[in-house]
Length: 499
Image (cartoon, rainbow, N blue to C red; front, side, top):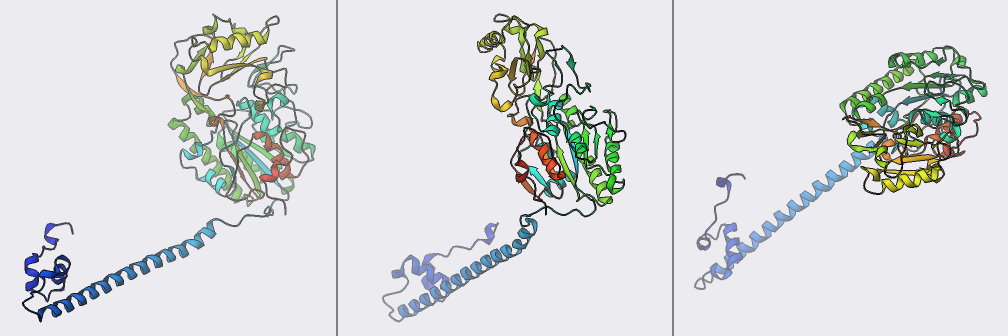
């Protein structure tokens, strides 16, 4: 078909009536000019030619129809066969909806293992091969577009919201660092005095219900409060140098205890990929490696649970605390640029970025500070000024739930995703990553994966706020929880009912 020699040689019309025995040339002659296909001088020739032409047409028509029928038969047979062969695969891979939780096979009562991968932005799981996280997703329940953190989207406020079901304004950890306006005392990430940590975290709730808990790192878990005494061997003091493998193996060792002594609630914490995200931003190859490392730890955990015969019995909840967004020095807003409108001394500022928090001294009205700052920011004369809006905390969007605490400074600035606020101009030239922005920003979302007897296999659920996790855990453990900001019925939309 591809060469000229394969093409049929055109037959000159002038020769066709010289060879009436050739059906194809007769047809050409008939279609072209029937009057020239016979000679009026030879009456016997005309009916013979006509007969041949008729037979030729009939033969070709039959051949064409046969070919068409054969093609149609093959096409529909193939389609039917394909449909039939694919039907069993479809029914096999998409099992019918589960109506109730699967029974425990080895453990005496439910066990929840709550895992946090700090700064695991939703979407990181697609950056590289994550077969072990993928296994939990395929055989469990996932928030399809991520878990929504609380505002501010910072590590300590969110970790404590996850285990208390409270917004930061109610559990007291309103930032990673802040001041108590009544005493002037400073809260840091090393503060373990109970006065800072309000609400009732899950480990305390579990003990209140006569059960056992074990925490391998979690903000607030070292605080001895209420019935929680941070018991030796079941409450690890935070140490970032402890290898991830050792953390996993220690949690696995709890399942080697007599069944009656296995803690019903456990936590496990990894700093990655937050550590790398701050240094290089969310799109660097270092993030890919950090995510792969977390996946290996999940694989190590699964393998250990399987060896002990309890993998299907344990309810694993894997979450992050927040996402991550790239930042560069070209996206800076300098408070000193506002001096023509209002001077903001550094000692007024409790937090610059990504949450701007200002507490003016007595005698300076917060409302005046807000008005003058916004006037300057909207003037067009402040570099990147349009990317910062300043509020009285009472006027913040209600969805942020960031007002009902005197620990929250009266002036709060919401910064556009990826921008930073600094006091004065510097000559630094660097890029990295940050979080802490409005929790409505998609890049701040993280992951939620639930795997275990009460999580339907392969199920996707809409995104939800992390304050709902507290009631989710107490429901799985079948214990009475403390009052919180979560919905009392939310867990019914996530969990399979008990048999």
